[in-house]
Image 1 (cartoon, helix red, strand yellow):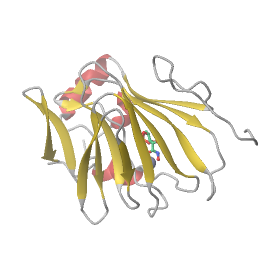
Image 2: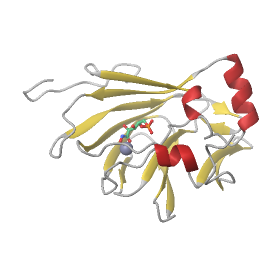
Image 3: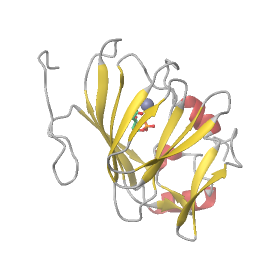
Image 4: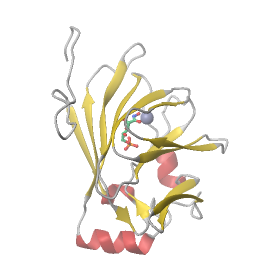
Length: 195
Ligand code: PAN
Ligand code: ZN
């Protein structure tokens, strides 16, 4: 891990940073219970396990004062009428915010608090989104052919709580209807993990 100021470039055609420490790849199989159309999910998975999104992380100590940052790339695609999306999470230290800056593509950030407030914000190139402390967040790519690319940065001690979303899902889903994204209530909310 570097102990001097360092930089990286993200202007390569695929928005892959010139320097990174971790390359995380998440596939369809890691989204068990999250997609509304469970039958389509199962039949797609029976054929292949496509790559939904990738994260390039720069490693820093997971302590207060450090800022963890990197690039998130959600590929285009759908499971039934529901777009490819990230798992989504609360931060383990719930009172932790995060900044996203959209570099490419077209999408949404779906957010909610443990108390049941929700918000969905558009992501498009040049848009900065501050995800408030306490808000779970999931990025959704609504483009049919382009990656959704964001730069993210958050405090080093934040941690990730994936379990709550894995069990319950998000209260809101983004579905394609007549080729347009639509925000709908998640009828499976609270029981996402159940097959
Ligand atoms: C981002 C996310 C990234 C992938 O770095 O981790 O977009 O999403 P999941 O972590 O939900 O799989 C972030 O929000 N970090 O806190
Ligand atoms: Zn986060």
